[in-house]
Length: 295
Image (cartoon, rainbow, N blue to C red; front, side, top):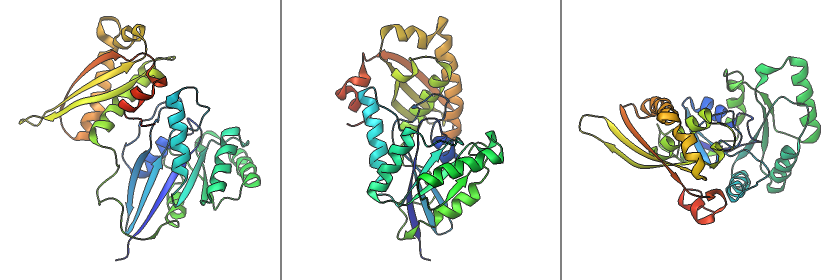
């Protein structure tokens, strides 16, 4: 049987629901989701096999005005991910205005000549007349192959979206083996699940200065998996905030993270975490590279 593949980048500004959408499309949690901007920092592949067609979705960081070297890296990831793919799906909220990030992304999409579909997410938050206004605003600005309204949160419109995106598939071997849902190794997924809980539990600027590295992942003979993780923060004063009074914050983060990690690995997990300081790492090229974000 002839196989087809398509690599499709999901692009858009922060918090439009790209990670929620890629999880919904993949049918499994592969990208962390919070209400904090810039949650996604790197490119993540979500792999979906539908019959003889394999769709590889590229989840990217939210396109924003960079304020740090890490921010520069994230914006660079978005720009690179728009090139050399079969199509780009621009994900937007149901707002009848083409904002500056969308202007820049669409200009870049046009410059590389890649086909584009518009995905209007979060349609569960608006009524139909408002949605029609959004569609009209974007149609007047750019000639998309299709405009698909969806609710990634509730799964609405995904069948229609799949039909459109499958149209970008071309003949060729599958890029990933059957059964694969992401290109990310277990250590990276686990580190991201921990960071998700930190983003959820902490406020203000502390979350954006946090990175997580899983230093050890080892299975015991009895089936239990030992996972050791180091949480890096930018300031000494952040250590106490992350650990919390009597260690309660870190304990809460660990409890929440362990539940997701056990679901992901399908095994009982013994999770240990430490907090270390890497002063100003988001503006230090060497430290950024050491933490897995090559510049």
